[in-house]
Length: 174
Image (cartoon, rainbow, N blue to C red; front, side, top):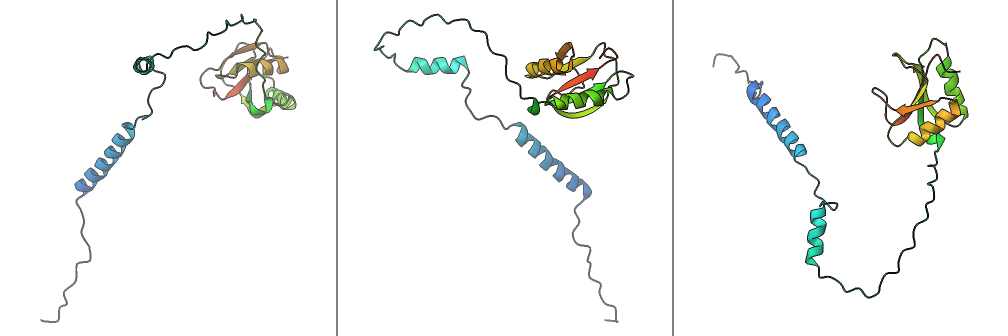
């Protein structure tokens, strides 16, 4: 040996890039396939076919006693649903050139017990002041409209959020 030291290769083992990309892609696709094929393992209890097959397998039981005739139900009006104002989110928008209108009405709604989560300007055209509601919030929308003196109540439209009431105030709001 002539004094030259042999240098040890310290680069390690490197896999080709194509093999790495393929491996990562295969794992990702397998994960997506696993998630996509997971189903609900619970039997469908609401299926009429399932309930009819269960009843056809059981022998009919003999009635031991005749049922008493049911008296006719009296028609009583349903009481309106109770609305807890503090649990309903409300957002108020100004769609007029009246400065500070949304802020004033938001303060009025808070004073009535509503959970006001924001107020801002609405960009677009709304004909008249309206309270918009999401699913299951119709009774709350009617109550909020009464509290604020708004005469129009309608289902929410895009881009409004369905988990809250949206009040849009126009030039005609007094």
